[in-house]
Image (cartoon, rainbow, N blue to C red; front, side, top):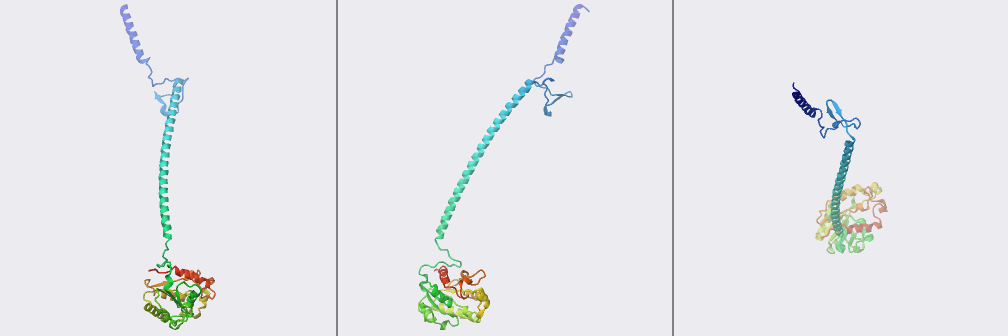
Length: 332
């Protein structure tokens, strides 16, 4: 081979070598591929950050990269903290605004409730100035209500006339009076003293007639006694067609007196008789009144402290009875 040919061949081989080395030996690393260095190697704990090439772990880095990463991390943390603070502030502001709104709504509701309560209270106060009817439609008597009232009865009514008379009322009463002897009895009280029943019931027109009798005839035949009472009602109605008739329950006796059962006087009998009297009431023209709860003890007997003889109330109890009657009337 000629020298000239050899030189040309050598030149071609050198050119080929240079080209081959550039492609396979001196290849430039990409920007995201970090060369391994024992001096600056840093173990990466997170397996997700470990690259595997040809079965080997690539875990090296440089101090520059480490510093850069740290700076980036710090910057990221700072940005994150700022975002969190701003978010927290926003949320807190929103929560505060919501709290203020809720508080405002609560204050409005409370104000409304207070206004309603004041209105209700005012209405209740206005209502309370008017006497409420007692059970059964009874109410407080207006002034002068008893000026045309007549009370008829036995010794308990005598006590009313003497110890708790209602101003303006007329009393016709005597000790021992009963439905069996009323037409023969003479009154023992001042307003009608010495007068008989017929003279009294016909003397004037009454708007109200009160009757209380029965304790003196509990031992008598009950049907006969009730027939007598019914006849008395008819006689009063005939003489006083426009009057309201009030039937007063017989008062209980004390438990000790009830156990004695003298002349058949005991509380079970009194209750039975009172129930029969209540049946005469029609709540239109005839009404039934029972003052017993005012004077009774827990057992339903006349309280011992309210009587001396176990049968009649003490004198101090009649004004209480008077007041009770004044608050249990029918007004038309």
